[in-house]
Image 1 (spheres, helix red, strand yellow):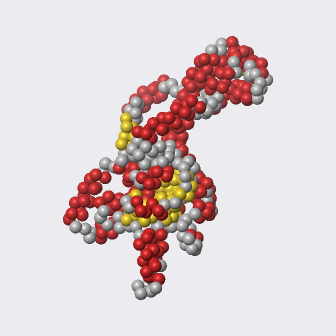
Image 2: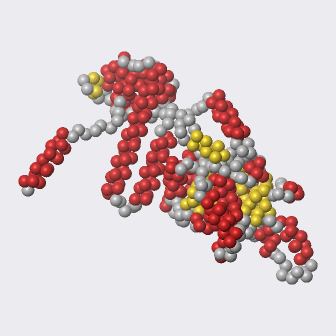
Image 3: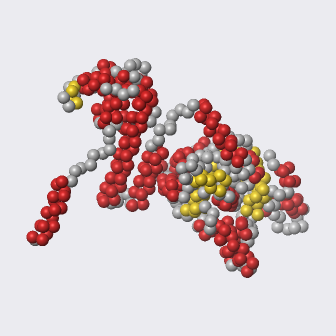
Length: 499
């Protein structure tokens, strides 16, 4: 027992001498800023765009800042006399009354020129306190281990809160001057001029589609919809690989990398496994049928092609997440993590109907889809990347004589049409013509069917049904089903079918 007591004695002494750390704050900066506002109300407008009452550390300072802001926004003058009427007269600040404290703040006010610098210092300290809060919450929740919050959910919640803090913890919000907007537009035009294909957005690798869309634009939600068998996943896979394979990073002044051409691609494959997706890409690149690869019906030359292709593809920045039934919150957390760790330029989701919403949407599937598309649109803006989201269409298309999809086919699926910046439909008439082949080749209709089949064989339409910043219309593409590959039509005679 004596040994234990001797070991505990220095520990108890250390604990007694330990000083508790105070949360980061700067009361002098808060006093200086409030004094500047009380002397010259223009100082408020220099900081009100990013500084809120909650960012001040001292409760009385929060209240003074809030009252002064309300008075100024009403078009009146905020000074020690007008502000004190909204505060309790009997409150004390040390030996001073509130009225005396306000007068002291105004008397020791800094120049209005320094107001923004003080505001930024106060804001940065508030961010540091928020970081401490997030860290403490992580520790406390990890210790408590609540049943309704497994570790994975806690990680996702912490990542979300940190990313929100990183994105909102800036002073660059609010209005921009027109000169700044013009400079950004000219910069974007310059980048488009230097980029391969002279596109303002990221090239899909399919020139006829790029010429209509100008590439994939940052923060856009692009819905790629169609009935089963039309080739939605094939087109999305082709575009994703084309972008990743043409990735050309450019070093920025701060040491980070920015894509000059192509980009880093994140692919959420909720329907197919990563192996199946890789098989499709290898088939498309090597022109070895995917069905032969699966069955092992390949020659030695084909196998050498596959090996060479796989070695080349190892360097391609295409990242696949094959988690089934992922929620919009999980998807967003993983996308943020990918952007932070590897970079991210394009996100693909295959497909919307296999995702899950929150429990709030209950059994209403339309509300759940609406929550998912709204979340995807918000995520695209947050990460500043285009998101290609695939969507199934209802069987209503099959009941029409004209099987070409229309925007109205999306209206029963929630707010997909409203949230989307671009809506693309994949339509292969060959699929439907093939299904009505006459059983007897001596049938009078057989020749007519054969001519129709020859006309549509190996082609596909990508219908641009909606585009916020460009024209609508139809792009005719070649489709090789054995390699699941979409490409530009080589034969110019096919242009007669373009709309």
